[in-house]
Length: 234
Length: 81
Image 1: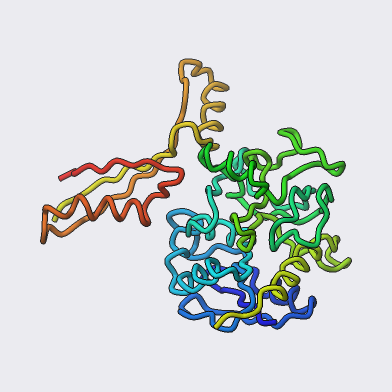
Image 2: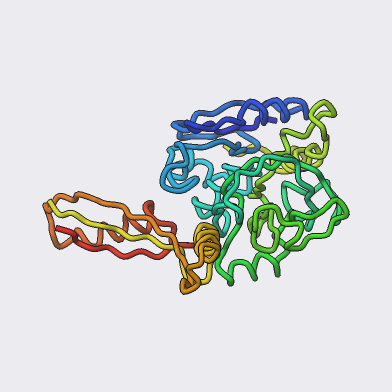
């Protein structure tokens, strides 16, 4: 299975993502943002970093990179598209996911592992996980605070499209266990079809015991399992 | 050449962490009279007036597509010169 790992100027997690997906038996390929076609790829990942320097707003310039037209086409056609951290911000700017990510509540860059609770398995990100399961993944962001207009939030919650929430080790999600002020402790969401999903923490940094956690595997395995169900489109 | 100033602000009701943190700091310093703080962003454009009538519409489009995020931000455009 071929996975496109998109690289914008300023992306810095592409090798970690490619390594992790390679370990899970896929064939990842780094794709420069000037490419205009993603034909034959079974899945697309927008990895973390600071695309185009995060100038203007995070993801604001990246969403107009030439490759994004092909990413949007794949998203509409049902190909699994996963955004991680900066990739989440880009997918929101592109309108493929609702809402936006703004500065953390305490105006601090957060770089530490955080517990997350699986809220729904109805997406390419959580298909092989279990509702209520608590994962521990590295969070590494300044703009990780999810906000959205009230009507979008209501729809997300009502349709079960919140995939992950920040919580404590026991799985309790409230304001006291919310690291960055994210609305409703939201850490990851999906589109209505479930084929476009994104999260702020980094599953690719938690795939081997040596890294301190293997909890990221279940999310990336979900993504890989989703690609197997959605054969490549020309 | 027309000089334009675009003032972009977070929509009312959406959280503005910079504003909240700055309000807290102002209160800590004893400026209890401050009720709310909102951060915004100013962008200045020099636009050629080849077709003055379309400048406004095109600048609105620039704001909607790139300069602002219509999901979370409102904006106003002013001519400064």
